Length: 501
Image 1 (cartoon, rainbow, N blue to C red):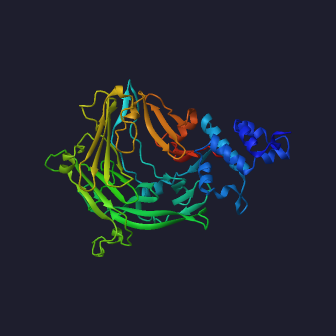
Image 2: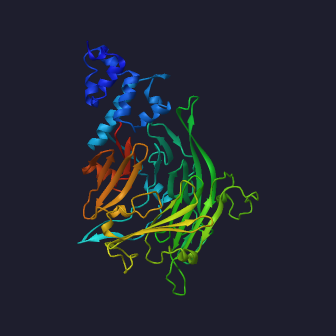
Image 3: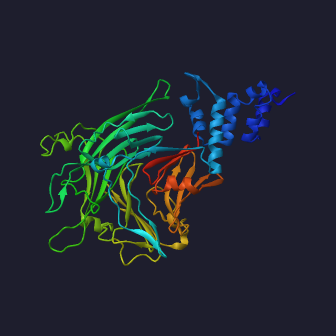
């Protein structure tokens, strides 16, 4: 009696101890062995045992396996061998730190297009410096964005923004007209695309040498269309939601005016830091913070109504729910002044009722905006400001001995001192795939040219080094899940490390 001849329950009991490599080899002796080791019940058991958190295993449990695994157009006929092979190959590549392929997407646009349509918001002038070696502490903004398998980027040839469904390769045009517009920042989060942009034509003179450009925020809902059996049929809808004016006057297009933004599905927040041009010798920057509720859709576009006379009276569209001036920011202890340490904003995704300001400072930082009274080693702090009534939240850590354990990442509520747990390596970027329980960590030694990319799963850790990490992590930011890691190199190319193919 051969192994496939055993009763099904006994067969499943015996084969549960085989490795994934053994399972592949057991298909080879004959057609009978092949059928036994590729049938539905066997594959389901093996996936649940070896890869319980893989995307396909989760889909099998909910009955929503993707169309990539169907036999032709038959939704009830799944190619189980293909499912197992793809998952096993993916996790073999993840655990070995060896991507199966590298893809590069061209985002580099013409010089004329760059000058006319792209001007990313500048960051603080602070960098690492030690023993005549230096490295970036802040990295410039991307002109592209990613979330949940959807990549939005400026197409180098088409000279417009497109959305690419990473798994199928399908592309869709973003209905945002770049004519006479300059994109300052773009971000996809909570299935909501936010484009922060300025008018190409100046609105008025600020002084004898500077002009002001009006700034706006345009939002789009990104909706994946579902078929009759709740399968993703590959089509995506990009629906305009609303538009708001970012600042009542606008900003000059320079590297002195900074603003940090964040959004979720219901709110948009901005912190503004403006260079003080007072003729009375004042050097304190002008600071403010504002939060909008952007839940309601509205056809009204303030960019088409400079006078504001056509603004609807039914109060539809974005609404201001919180506004703080510099005195109120000082009350909460987050006024930055001429030596800012703010690194980003975060919004509470669960309830949307708290805005968090994350601050980081380090003794090794140098630059024109670095203060003289720095921390003994490093200091990180998070301040949460309620959008309504209630107390504000604060968490801080400046203890080199805590090892990053005291304030391990718990959303936005905890100070991210884990970034400094492995000094002199700093955690430049960290991405958590909660469904697959994978963590992708981009580590950078400030005296080294090449960063290191670590991947951690349940009971294992792998490392991607060399040129691949330099390519994907050169700009200090990554997006990732179990299928790929996405970053940008110094040639304005989006680099995708594929673990699937």
